[in-house]
Amino acid sequence: MNAAPESDEAKLASPKLSVTDALSVRDLTVAYHRKPVIWDIDLTIPQGKLVAVIGPNGAGKSTLIKACLDLVSRSSGEVKVFDSLYSKARKRVGYVPQRESVDWDFPVSALDVVAMGMYGELGWFRRVNKRARSLALQALDRVGLADYAERQISQLSGGQQQRTFLARALVQDADIYFMDEPFAAVDAATERAIVELLKDLQSRGKTCLVVHHDLATVTEYFDWSVLLNMRVVAQGPTDIVFTQENLRKTYGAKLSLLSEAAEKLMLG
Image (cartoon, rainbow, N blue to C red; front, side, top):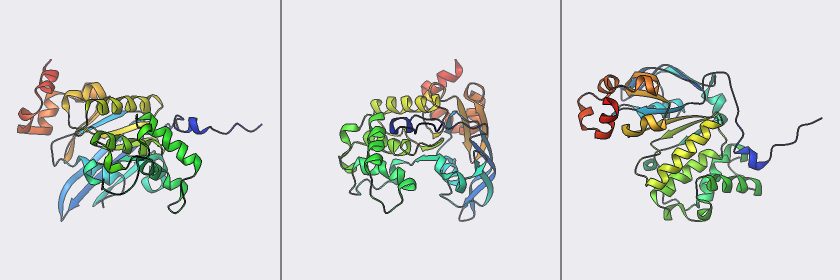
């Protein structure tokens, strides 16, 4: 007897479980104009973790994510997603870029932006059908923007734009999400929405790798951390590796300029 087909409503909520690590990086080096930006990176990220990638400006956090996604050339090294090369695991990956890297004046609606997340399924030159539109609306609803579906992306606030790109990643129904500074310059409501979304994704077995800057919220939001300053300083469970000693190794003299709340958190 054939199993009943999965409903559209279930599509955005159905986990794909795997016994392998979600991400494996070996001997990764990226250089711009012969100057290394990150080098000799070794990472192992277990499935189902909420991962904070933290480090000072210029540490290579965004470059690390882009190298994992084949968005920048690697000088050396290998990246595997669920034990497969990225080119073979592309459909299992969702990506939320930095807001600064997006042309927000491009004349598209929020719904159009979300539907772009399904181009791998639809094909670049196919129109969005009713089913795809329904899935896009569901994703917008999950981030609290269903009423803004037809609004031009340029007319949305910064927080709403960020949530639109989160919905775009959601509609891909990925198993691992790479998010480049999703909390940057967002309002409190958007920050809460992002945290709720991350927790929901984790509850369904998804893995999220997030470039993050607010040290005061790392232990609250993430259960796995990667401390990076061109090389990996420490990686592992947040309650083990997020220590004052590792932070000093990562940030050096800059640590004294960071949030006082984070300092108090670590001391006590």
